[in-house]
Amino acid sequence: GAVVSQHPSWVICKSGTSVKIECRSLDFQATTMFWYRQFPKQSLMLMATSNEGSKATYEQGVEKDKFLINHASLTLSTLTVTSAHPEDSSFYICSAAQGLSGANVLTFGAGSRLTVL
Amino acid sequence: SQKIEQNSEALNIQEGKTATLTCNYTNYSPAYLQWYRQDPGRGPVFLLLIRENEKEKRKERLKVTFDTTLKQSLFHITASQPADSATYLCAPLESGGYQKVTFGTGTKLQVIP
Image 1 (spheres, each protein chain N blue to C red):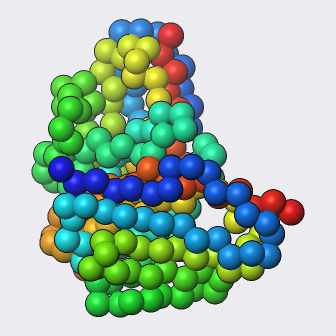
Image 2 (image 1 turned 90 degrees about the horizontal axis):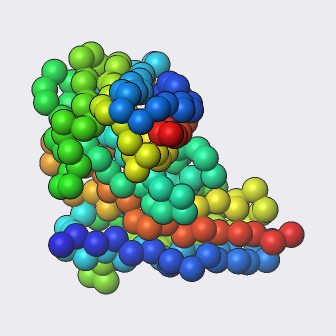
Image 3 (image 1 turned 135 degrees about the vertical axis):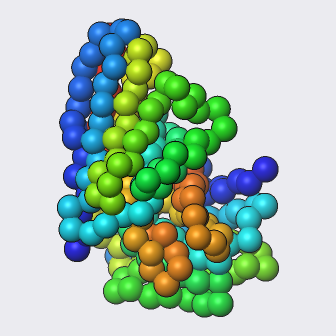
């Protein structure tokens, strides 16, 4: 079945540093990838939609200069949290879309837990 | 604005019973509706997709219904098992080339042995 690999699974960094999270589709090509964040006991919040070869589409309230998304190939998307602060600490999850008769069915990575000190 | 609502309270049921989870949506005209399962600290896993012209879809012990008039989907797990304990998320999906997938609040199901 479809597999999405996400790295790192957890990261601790100092305030003011940048952190890059990678999301790879291992056995299929993903034209579209989605990035979500999730706070404890809350649902997934869509941050942005990433389309290969074009700029990401950010959801309202998500700072595009803060959360840089690059989707340079059909199997790799990256999320860089720039100048991270403690409030950016969260669980970040990527997903890759496969079209199923017109619908985007998502395969998710295992998630990356970011802790900013 | 668009809204997706699921039972906000956790659902506790006895093993062997049927669990029924509800997903209501507003300001959507979905062509599809998806259900996912999420275990703690993990990414969600796709379970089922139902199209707007389908009333019901089944997969093993799972059954999903989709009522576009009521703007509601029901998700049933029959003969529930403790291993079914997880959070279940619904995602209505509109038609179109670049569909974004947004999720409901999720319902936490606990199956008691």
